Length: 113
Length: 115
Image (cartoon, rainbow over all chains, first blue to last red; front, side, top):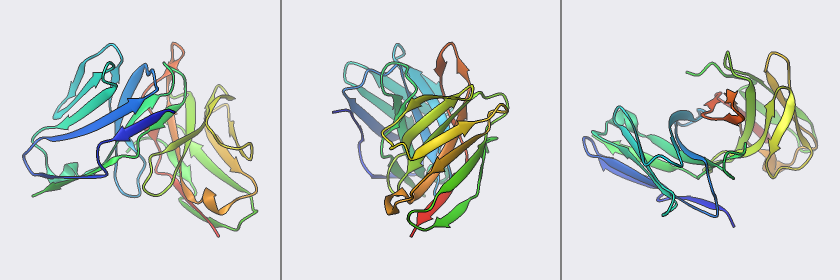
């Protein structure tokens, strides 16, 4: 069966350190993978998209990697700040570019001052 | 803040009733997707509308239906409400180009409670 797993429900990181979140999937052949941030009571906010033929993408303090052999994406936040505290969701298209975007359950990240 | 708006923000309904949720897309976007998010879970894809037609559907029964209007705004209708329909309903707009729609811009959601 198809599954998306994010490494942990909750992650606590000291301010200034790098936070690394993991997204693993099975039985999917995605064209791309996306990362979103969600604050309590709000809708998800798009952060980064990485395509299946890309290894790495960066945006300011954010970095995403995508390994289609390992079926894994890593999401890094460098120089983390308390304002980065939120739930982070990975999402992918179910079958190479079709319209059904499937989300993981999310990792709740807390940056400790 | 995205340009996607949803109404109402909160709603309480009784089991068996019907509900209509509304979404206004971000300017320039031609595609609307609806998601259901239960507490502690990721959003689950309900369906997507492109050019006023359903374009992809998740594992939701037919009592979940939708509409997209010429101005790309959209409605989600749920008939015969069940207790398990209690959730945050999210609308997301995107721009479909070359056959694919990419990053999605979410509204704040409608919190539906069924009693």
